[in-house]
Image (spheres, rainbow, N blue to C red):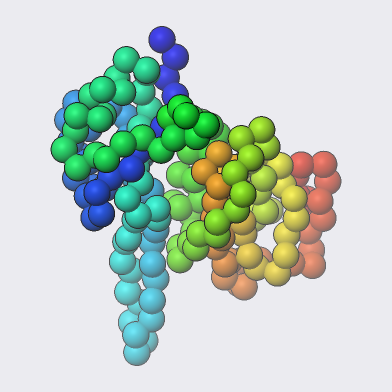
Length: 174
């Protein structure tokens, strides 16, 4: 059977617990964390919080759906058009990379369009699968069409020169 990624809705503040319970059942999960960096009187402080509160992602077959539903603190799957919403594998990979590389990521709600491909405004040193649409100032945006969200991160100005890169096909070149 084919494995797909699904979004699972959990009780508030139970994402980590659900991910842990499912890992014990040998179910692949992804629990996106946002690295928050703040500065307080010359001290750099790093904290982690859920990127999508009350959501985790599971990679399962259709037969394993009952296991997820019976797990403590799970409310249900996220549905789209009467069926559990399938999240594209490329979107999960891109989200994993984006949250690993960038801090203080913000979410922007967008209209859901499951037929649209992932669109990325990308750092010129990164090769994402998807379409690069543009680079503006120091903002990086990752469009996740099956979730209806855009992830937005701001690059440090020392790492980015917005005037020295051009768009060539789907890749940025210097």
